[in-house]
Length: 387
Image (tube, rainbow, N blue to C red; front, top):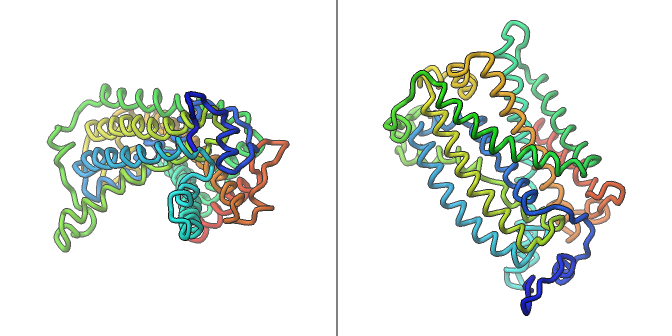
């Protein structure tokens, strides 16, 4: 079922009807906003900041830089495939629905069920991880700024984590109209904000590391696994720094039922979010690594990114820069809940979850309100389970 037949573009509602659904969600997002959701969830500054210590210890700068390039190329190939599929099947279900359509008829239901549950559980884990990362950044930054007045504890981190999830849930439930405004602010923060931070780091740093250090410095802080196994094993683990970051671009598909001209906008949202994120991410990685004043001190710091910024900007400047990063991470969590709730709604609509509970759109707020509140509860319980 092609969205265009005989040179005539079908309406989004007609395409959705051919797939088998009625238009229930409000369709008022454009290409920029569809791109913004995936761009915000990928949020390169979120993954890079929260996993920078892991990157330094598991392979070091060499694996961080070359791993980012390799993962970006491979992810673009995945994005090309996903873009082609979503252009033909623009539905909020995304990967699980595509699995059902592309699998053999005898295996269709099983493929959709397995893909859907893997997608759902992964989204719950990622949303929890984003909020935890943000809570940890807030807590560790406060501890560094006021070491005599604040000491991080499990209770305070859990409290911050819960507060972040509540803020995301409330905006996604009662402020659907505000999401487009937050979408624009997120795009600005993740592009102009992150780009300005990278330029400022390079311009302000008194000392710059060599290109030999940035691209070829291998470091094994895993306890000797490069000897017990091999350096390749450490490098394979180290590229998770990049792979964890460049994820979530399926959000453009999950938002397709709310996007105008979805058969065109959603695939562009998938692909452009990956490419733009890869470029900005590589730029900020280079900025952090070239601006690092002392490798050993940064390696042992509780928050390496904050340490780099303190060395370059001083305490006050580092606090301002970290506030920018925390805002980016908050936006990342906000739109993660947005995307995840749409996937859960679609999955329930197809019978993967109780349809009468989760497959319903609230007409007052034009959103699947039950899935959004459930994501808050799942996120809190998941965190309690593994903390």
